Amino acid sequence: MGELDGGEFEVALHVDGSATVHPRDRSEMILPSASASVPENGGDRHRWMIFLIVGSALFMAALDLTIIGTVIPSIQHSLHAPLNWTAWTITASTLGTVVIMPIAGGLSDQFGRKRIFIISAIVFTLSSLACGFAGNIYLLVCLRALQALGGGAFMPSATGIVADSFGPNRDRAIAMFTSILPAGGIVGPVLGGLFVTYWSWRGIFFINIPIGIAVLVGARHYLPRSVRHDVGRADLVGISLLGLCVLASMFGISLLGTAHIGIGSPALLACICIALVTFWRFVRHELNAKDPIIPLQLLRGRSFLIMDLVNFIYGAAVLGLGALVPLYAEDRFHIAPLQAGTVLATRAVGTIAVAGVASFLLRRTGFRLPMVIGMSLIAIGSVLMFTRPASIGAFAWLALTTGLTGIGMGAAMPAANNATLSFATDNIAAITGMRGMFRSMGSIIAVSVMTAVVTRSAHPGIALGWGFVALAVPTIAVIPLILTLRDHRGSW
Image 1 (cartoon, rainbow, N blue to C red):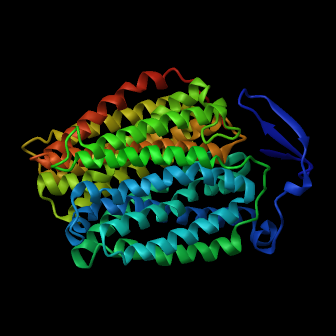
Image 2: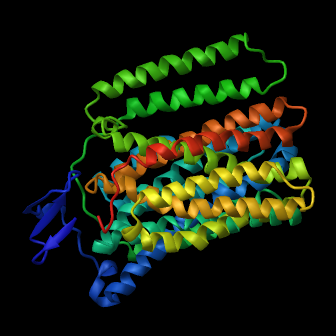
Image 3: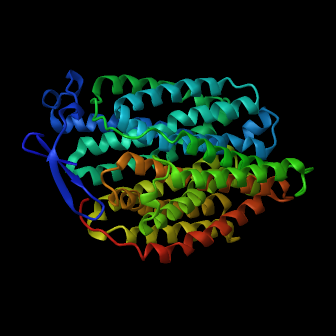
């Protein structure tokens, strides 16, 4: 979106590269306010203050995403819960993200990004406080799902805020913005190890309270009121069907991880039937819905289908099994929780070291090359994580291999984010929500399957290691599809 002559007109960029210019509706202009006055604060300083606020929110969500993996064994012991059900603290949170992201994308366009952003921060902060006081695994899982409704809504609204604020440089700003995620990846695992070692796993939730309050204060005073668009109603039926399908699948997979549950169990068969029926109903509904959760015009595009598959595999390999790396370090190599968290932090260091450079080189390299390099390194690092040479210590080898996967993430993530958005520049929030949904679904399936396998295995650490090897196969297999994408250089 660009402005001509003082904002009297707006330019709409289309998927095919064409552009149309038409008068701007005054009722949809960004409303001026004292807190959003650019001249008073200075244009660049104002934009970077906005970036700091929304970046802090994303950091808080990333912290919560990565800190949980380190404390899984502690939660399991403290609340007397089996591993396959304790893992729901990860998957239930991810499911909440799957459900809320498509809704948040549309709501941020319809009601204003600032309003949705503030509501998300309130929900996330209050639910974090409640999680810290949970007395059993079932209540904690429910509260984690509620927490995810707030955390998952950050990304679509925040991405739109950054895109609006940085104008022609929005591609670079979005790439830098999404690179904040690895910062949470560094701090989260280490904090989790510190809390478990010196206090309690409950501290991982209480740490969100001061950050959330700071984000709310900053958002109230500095974020501008944004454009409101006349968008369709949220596809609540489609979202409910999708959520029920994923929930039934998760429950069925968890049942398989229970020793006394067999393939012919009535409860398992019921879960399978519910999942299949709701999936069938979801597909039929989406084909006929006026405003589907997954826009058909995007799914009909070959480029979108490929990127959805890339995002799904990326979510499984990075967000899913990546969250289980500390558990792998503790179970297979008997590494202490604090050291196990530090292992995962090396991955984030690798991501940060590369992501910033990769973001600024995107206009020259295009999307395909960084994604090919990144996905290759993720796959190689995952395989090497399982095959430790006897001459190298376990901690050093895990730090090296997770760092390699982090370098792959740093190369692939900015390119994948911008590739999807560049295909439909006039629908940023909705595209961001759908991208996150596919990544989250990949994470849910990976965590659910692997924890079920590990629970039944006589050697949990070895079984988890084979999971890393197994996921390297689709990660490599998707590369030929990436090479068929129409590449893009320059700004979008």
